[in-house]
Image (cartoon, rainbow, N blue to C red; front, side, top):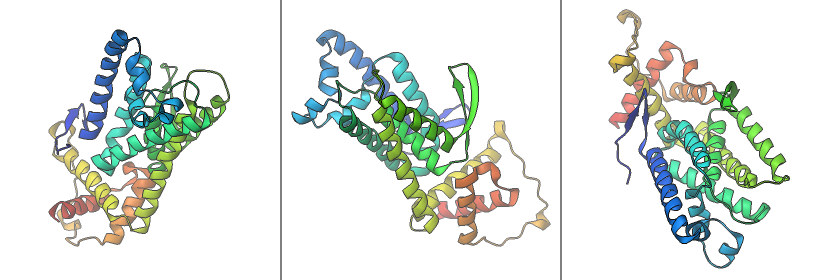
Length: 286
């Protein structure tokens, strides 16, 4: 279903699974608006998540509710977060694992809403969206993220702090009135964070070599592309007599990947970047 094609977006590239989530969710929302008008809310009734629906055998609802939204602002906010966090996460996880994260967090978020609230019906992709935020906070806890508070005031927070604030707000708002499924946000975010923490633990122990290979390939490939792309030219002026033709050990590559996971790519020195470029070339040739 997902090939190797990628779509360029400015200086970033949109991976296929992220692109598919955006298009499918947007298309289904348009279809929902048209058919709900024609059927007096029949599509929302059939595909939204309801406790009574699950009890009557509508077992598709924990998935299909993610495709429904209550307003244009609702869907735009969710798709914006998918766009922001999905690109980098998919490049590290791969399309299949990324979709499992997104859909799995959404399903867990929906079931969490059923258990903790369950009044009326639940719609929206927020469970999966918060799962992406939770995963990002687990993999890159110290990565700074800039948001527009009230769409006007820019604030910068580290990823883990942002996730903690969102979780705290969800807990507080769960006990208030309103039509927002805060319990789905909380359950989805915790699911994403747990999943990310497990992957990170496996990667650091060396038991998840695939994740480490993916991370090394993504980072090395991105740095290699930055040097080769004319509009983003980055020159490395290193005297040839200072470059040793000695392959770094995998232990050194692992150390650099740990450094990226903790502090981001910007923390690497020039020699460390060259090491990961070499590792990326080796992984591509295997």
